[in-house]
Each structure stands twice: as C-alpha cells, then as structure tokens.
Image (cartoon, rainbow, N blue to C red; front, side):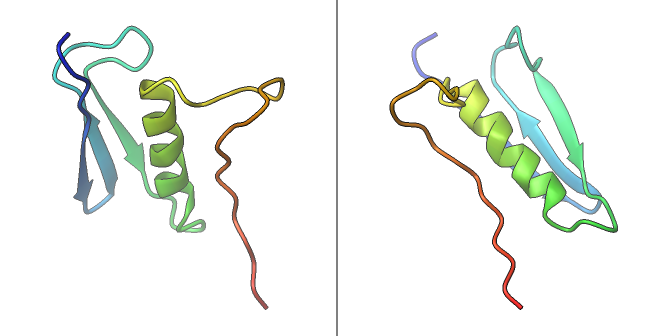
Length: 74
C-alpha cells in the first residue's frame, strides 16, 4: 500500500469509517453508532479507531502515548 487513508463520515446515527483497502483488524468499513445517553461515546470510539488503524493506540508500557481523556466541568 502506497499510503494509508481513512475516511470518516458523520451520519444521522453516528459515524461511518472507511478504508480504501481491507484492514485485518477493523475491516473495510465499520460504523460507530451514537448512544442517546452518552453524546461523546461514538466520537471517542472513532478517535480510538483512528489511532489503532494508524498503529498509535499504544500500551501502558510505552514511554509515551496518546490519551483520549474526557473532562467534566461543573
């Protein structure tokens, strides 16, 4: 594969992620549906999928890694 690419489309019920060539882990196309009770759950899953697809999901043993963190402001 010359380059890696992923397309994210926002649809009424969530997000559709699509890659030009099938990926062993996630397949060619997959959906993250929104949860009516948790507005951030679907986009959070999309961000993790993107990190995983590009090989940057990391582990707790890595010296550095990217985190996706929710912050509550009251």
